[in-house]
Image (cartoon, rainbow, N blue to C red; front, side, top):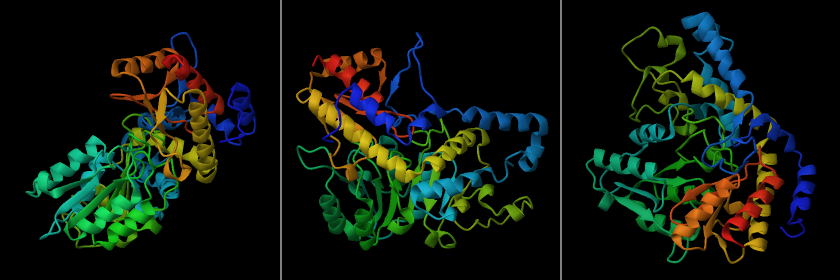
Length: 426
């Protein structure tokens, strides 16, 4: 980002011209025991709480207190249809129709529910392709599904790794593997943004290549939703799942989300694990023995929506709608570029950026390899925390920093790199 002042004055100048700067005041920023505000660059693990969250949750507590069971219909935001209030904003964030998304369960639970329907091994088409460094929960879920079908992961799980000496996946390598393994693939499961490196995959190209093989395509969008532009409907993915406690700022244990492409919305030939909240509201309370799924993604619901963990999501989605994903993405690219420029300028020999340098190939997060002996690298992270900068550590030497455009500033980024320079002794 040539031309940016790589100093405190330059950071303040850019903050002064930031059209989204006011949104930071709508979030609670953490402080230490002395009252010092911490520089929080860890939204890729847990987003900050919107100040309106307390009002949203308090309203549900008030309605529960005064109405009890009548709150299902008479609450200010009736609980029967509560989850539907998230649909429009979630559809906007993932590039879908309202009927293709639903807020429900948690990410890994939703992944299992999707694999029940969409991982249907048959004959030689009985393998699952994932990336070698997939988030562990995804791998556990896939392996357990293989075992459920009587398949051995050693034979039926295909894991694609970066080239030797590289950290990130190459699109051409993934496509070559898809073409090579195509006749054997039942399911391709890919991330939107790789959790460790911060690499944003070329989903449009990869989904098209996977579908050309005849495989079903699913996505884990935990690090992508609310972070990068998504176009799930147009890309023609079969399904996607995500959590909402990272960039969606809905709090620890918040409700997750799911996308099912409309072409599957009314299929009767798909098996699914059914529950009563997936049955149409008009006849749900007739308590009949026959399950009839709601058309669209809501038909995969199992149970009542968790009201108290969905309320913070609604509060955050309101902020997203007012900010707009296009403006957030523009600021995200600029913030990550400012972080990259500072690191390259101030820490060229102490830090290696392993996240791709091209803005289209990353989101908010930059993953930094500290070029220090293992124990010293860890101590560097500890010194960073002591200096009031909160990032995320991954053994043995990776520091992940993610300036989130909704609540982080250029000054936050400058302070973080300044503290990192002191921590590594540069």
